[in-house]
Amino acid sequence: MKLKLLFWLLLVGNVILFGLPRGYFGANATERREPQRLAEQLHAELLSVLPANSEKLASQTRSQAPASAPYASAAAAAGADPAAAANAAAPATQPPAAQVAAVTPSCTEVGNFTVADAKRFSEQLASLNLGDRVAQKLTQDVTSHMVYIPPQDGREGAERRIAELRRLGIGDFYVIPDSFPNPALRSGISLGIFRTEEAAKAYVGQLISRGVRSARIIARRSGAGKQVFQLRDLSPEARTALDNIKSAFPDQEIRACSA
Image (cartoon, rainbow, N blue to C red):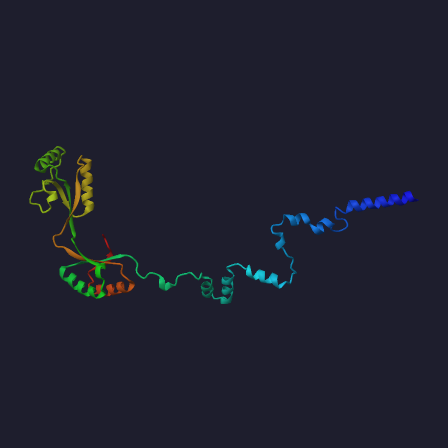
């Protein structure tokens, strides 16, 4: 009888020892205390367990809200108005429109005036008080284009070039005289005068095909110069005033500065 009781006691004890580590009878003591997990925590002494309805937990949640929350709440308060929502979401550091520069660096040219018209235009332009932002320049209209061979070694060089041109079968030329107004062209060889630059370029192409590779093109300008005005960094108000002044000169053109 005692042996049977001992047998059953041992059996029950073995079953309990077998089931306890495996959680068959609920959480074991090790899991309830978890000393090894606490040892692995960083600053475990700062941990505290708060109930679900703790006011301290709610205040921490509010303080950790995303930085964009004010923008979101402002947008929600704006309702369905897209413009109000956009204004609410704009960063506080966005510069106001009034701080945007009103003057854009630019150069405006007006011309071409005769001497008399330039004087009248200048008198009216003085009312804008532009100071050194306005400049008056003289320009000349291009009337034709000359194809020529630049001078070299004076008259002797010109004679050598004439002989070479004749050898190549080119007879339409003349030597630029010493009385020519532009001293840089004197003793050069003129090969023709053309009304347009395109025609002059086409003739240079023909000369190259025949062996003349030193030909150049120069623009010939009229003797009577025209006046142009260049105005820089105009404000919108000054540009409007300029347009009003220019309306009295319908033959003139407003354009970007050419140089």
